[in-house]
Amino acid sequence: MTKELGNDVPIETDVFVRRKLGLPSGISFIVGTIIGSGIFISPKGVLLGTGSVGLCLVAWGVSAVISLCGALVMAELGLLVPKSGGPYIYLLRAFGTFPAFLFVWVHSTVISPGSLLIKSLTVAEYVSRATIDDCQRTKGWTKLLAACVIISVTTINILSVRLAARTQVLFSIIKVGGLLVIIGGGIHQLAIGNPGILDTGFEGSTTELSEFAVALYSGLWAYGGWGNLNYAVEELKTPKRNLPLSIGLSMVIVVFIYMLVNVSYFTLLTKEEFLSSWAVGVTWAEKLFGRGAIFVPIIVACSVFGSANGGAFVGSRVIFAAARDHNFPEVFCYLNVHSLIPTPSVIFMTLLSLLYLILPGNVGSVINVMGFISWGTWGLVMVSHIVFKFKEDTKNIPRLIRVPLLVSVIMLLMCLYLVVAPFLSGFRMEYIFAFAVLAAGVLLYFLFIYFRLAIPGSGMVYSFLQLLLEVSPPSQLTD
Image 1: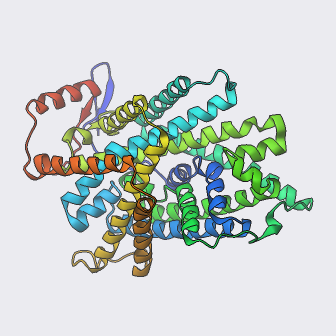
Image 2: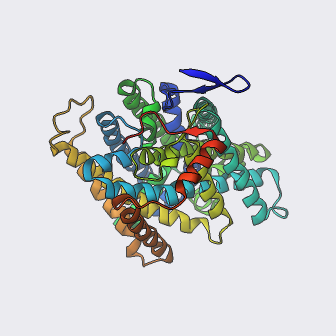
Image 3: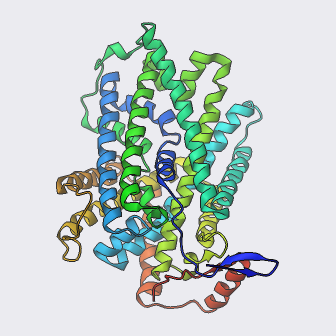
């Protein structure tokens, strides 16, 4: 229902999220978020950890199976608890407000803004390599481009859900098209009888389990994003049909593309070229197309931009869902009266990303912190899935998808290993930051969630933001 407000501007009187995402949008959000820079960079790490072409392809297959198992668990959870927020809502239902708040706190202050920062810097790096020579490219210039990327992604996600969805579809088409070119090049090499190093098979394979685990880490990073649609399930049309279809079809598409792209890489590059490359996809294109290889950095930039757009979309929905349940400052669940988008949540994530951009440090430290926290979160999600199998109010709910308990247990063990593994190589300073963030979250939980203390003047701030951003509490705000 709408009405006119001044100058014939229509606004919504019933303020709640609308179901505007169809099956194509759902697939594009998952595919577009998974396929970022990983398939162009991660192959080096996978080959380095396995030592041979054959075992490298096996590692990619194992990474695909693990990711598919996680995706199936998320599909069941999304249908069992069909509310936006992803892991937040599952932890809330399974364990209560404390772990749910800690997840939102870490996700909103580290994972989402950190991910947006890394992807924006990656876009800036590839755009710089494609348009500026090495002498003129500086760290300041790269950071300025990254800031422009962050602001662009934010603008798209503030204007409308439909624009964000169409942007995701467009960039998904571009990135898949670029990868199909690489696949086509590999098929051509095989057709003319040039298998490259594929015929070396398992020659030189590592026998160290720890090295194979490192290879899996790189592969799993490239597959990251399989659970992202669950963060915005309330905006998905016909979720009982479109959620499992989106997840299933997306994983099939990504696995098919990833395996064929790796085969294509091996038809043209030697092992030495593979391991010395800063980006395998670019090195492959330079060898095949020469000067024409400039299209690959552009494709990578488009690929990562699409991934950043999808990440920003789902990241803001976690904050929205928690604020709606009074487990985060209420202002973050306010929706714009025109676009019905949680504008304060999007802006909050953007400001943190820009803050991290100007702080000293390197991207590697951010990735280490994110990996440690992210896999810990996914481990808790797997525990939630196990709990729902036995909890009185959920165990008898009819399920369209029923994932075996064994899958959750295997995924949980994998997550535990990926959390513990980094500490086996020595303690790093960035883990102190991670524990400090968790400790701050515990303190904030007891002050503002458990004891419900209020910051003096917060009501005036909320009123000011409502007027400034034209936002309003959602109609379904819980009491």
